[in-house]
Every structure is written in C-alpha cells, then in structure tokens.
Amino acid sequence: MARSLIDIREFSVEELQELIDTANDIIARPQAYAECCRGKKLATLFFEPSTRTRLSFEAAMYELGGNVIGFSEAQSSSASKGESVADTARVISCYADIIAMRHPKEGAPLVAAMNASIPVINAGDGGHNHPTQTLTDLLTISREKGRLDHLTVGICGDLKFGRTVHSLIAALSRYTGNRFILISPEELKLPSYVKKEILKEKGIPYVQTTDLETVMPELDILYMTRVQRERFFNEEDYLRLKDSFILTPDKLKNAKEELCIMHPLPRVNEISVAIDDDKRACYFKQALYGKYIRMALILKLLKEAGTL
Amino acid sequence: MNIDSIQNGIVIDHITAGRGMKLYELLELSKLDCSVAIIKNVHSEKLGKKDIIKIDADIPINLDVLGYVDPGVSVNTIRGGVLVEKKKIDMPETLTNVIFCKNPRCICSVEQEIKHVFLLRDRKNKIYRCLYCETKAT
View 1 (cartoon, rainbow over the protein chains, first blue to last red):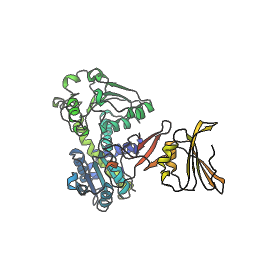
View 2: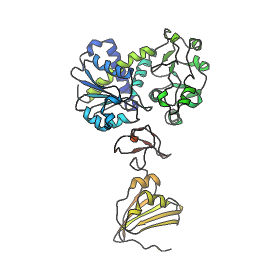
View 3: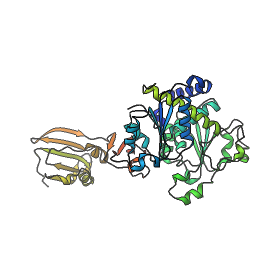
C-alpha cells in the first residue's frame, strides 16, 4: 500500500515544514518544477461537486508537467452503477499514478487508500477531513505571518460541521503558543469531542464566544467559514443560521493592522465584498497557495511511492 | 447449587454480575449443541458478585467481544478435566465486525461488504471510534 494522505495528523510537523518549504521553492522557482511529473497521471475522482479543490489539483498537476484524468460528479462514474469505492480504487490504480478523491461519505478516501496500489489524497470526505485545505491554510499562515506558532487564531462561523476548522485546529495545536477564539452561534459550536481530544488534552487555551467584534482586537488570524447547506438534514435549521456572522468593514475597525483574514471559499455572503480590497484580506491568495501546496504534496507522495 | 464440572470446554469467569446473558447473546452461544450453563450472581471475594459461563465444548471464543463488553473477564480452557490455559481478557485495540457504525454519513453505510472496524482511542474512558468516520461507539 503506497503512502497516502487521508488525515493531516498523519504528517509530522517536520513533514509539514518540508511541504511548506517545497511550496515556497515552487513559488520562487516555478520553472524548476515544470517537468517534474512528465508522463505521470493524476486521477481526480470527485463524487461530489467541487470547483476550486478539483481545479486546484488539476492546475497543480499540469504545472508539474503531468496529465489529469477523472470525473467531477458521481453520475459520470461507475458509482452510479453501484461500483464500490474499493473496486473503483483498484481499477484506477491501473490507469493513474496518484489519486485525488472527494466523496460525500466520511472515510471513503481511506477505503480507497486501503485498496489502491497508488497514493490517494483525500480531497474532502463529507464533513470529516480535508487535509489539503489544512495544508493550504498552513502555507498561507506561514507566508503571511512568517510563523505557525504564538498566534491568536479566531475561527468564526460553522464550527460544528466545518471540516476545515477541525483539521486546522488539530494542525495548529501542534505548534507552541497558539490560542484559539471560537466564534459561532450556540447551535454551531465546536463539537465537544474536538475540544476534549485536541484542545483540553493538550492544554491549549481557547475561548468560546458569540460576539465577533469584542474579540476582534486580539486576533492575529480571522478564519471565516460558510454555513454549509449540504451539511444540514433540516433546511429550516440552515436558513435560521446561515447569516449568523457577516464580516463587514465596520467590524474590522478595531482589528490589528497585521490581521490575516482567511476563508476556505467558496464564500456566500459571510465576508462583504467591500473587504476584498483590504490588505488584510488573504482569501484569494490562500486559493493560490492551495495550488502550490498541492504541487508539493503530489511530488512528495510520488517520490515516496518510487514513481518519481 | 451444583453445576457439573466439565471435561473439555471453556469457562468464562469473573464476568461482571448481570452481563452473563449479554455475553451469551453476543457470543451466539444459543447456536451451540453442547451444554452451556450461565451461572448468575455467584459469590466472589474480589467482585462481590459475578457471573460465570461454562461451555461443554472446546470452541473458539471471540475474545474481542469479551474484551469490549466486559474487560477483565478470564477465559479458562479445560482439557481432560484439567485447566490447561487461563487468559485475562483486556480491551482489544481493534474491533472488527463486533459493533457497527451507525453514522449515516459514514462510508460503512453504503460500501459493499466493508468490515466495520473500531479503534480504541481512550482506554481510560473506554472510547472506541470508527476507523473510517471517527464516530464514537455507543
């Protein structure tokens, strides 16, 4: 079984730094990497719609000189005929060198990795994990703040279902001196098991609040999230909570000059477009960095598999 | 009360009082043709009261079930009327097809013939989580 990336916790802090270093080198010297994956194929198996993650993976592989095959919705795959994830992974292993998989069911990429003979990258499994988003976030913070430690990180919005949030907290908890301010409506608070198993167990300071403006002056990073319709079984709950927190220029008046505003995107209305031109808005840069960190990840996994 | 001693078989001892029937069901002992005795509320120096199951046949026992339901039980193997092996059963690190994931969002809910695997994540609080979706076993 080739090494895959299913959960961000599978990579050590040293390996995360190695990926960040590679991504920074790609940004500095893109031409040096333009032919690295010539003749190699990435299979993008997207059983759930996604624009930026899929295109980011595809752009990453193309910029490494490789090719891309795959599908962008379950209806155009054999899953619509009832094929299992395990069989899909075995078959695609015959055609590609590495897989990026998104699936609405939690754990599906792990099942793929257990059955594939090539590396599998989890590109999002329901509300569970999204490790390449976390890698993107770490590269963004590293580049924008110059460090990954001793930061006050505000996370705002849907902290219950937001998979990026859980992974980001788990990842940043491994660096010293970080503290979290968790801003959400009562119904979308961080699940107690995340608090218990990550924050309390490691003694990491955190505060829960429903008031974004009060905590704004403390923040080094403000990570906004979208309330996701697809994570709710009940449409009424979604409609009631979707506009809980909207970031406007007015709310930023007490924020630090060096604040870094992040968002995994897509944005609906939780960040006013009036903030896009603020120098503290980092979310479009974040999308760009996502491509570079995925390039670094593809290189690392293909090298470890002996394919490069 | 007298229960005949067995010549070849298994004695599951030190079962927490009241859990004997549950283990009987989970181990599917009703399917056996041999004699099976469940002795409830036996006096125990250590536990106060305990249950015991005696199986009059040397059959394979799913130790993972025992360790999950009632860690601390002992499994004694008897051959020719003599105790030949005594095992203390602890919580297993992995449970395969012993309990089943109930999360409708988990891949287990749709994937054909997938093994339901739970991993021991917190021994002190006896917390198992699904390998695939990390949902806590209840």
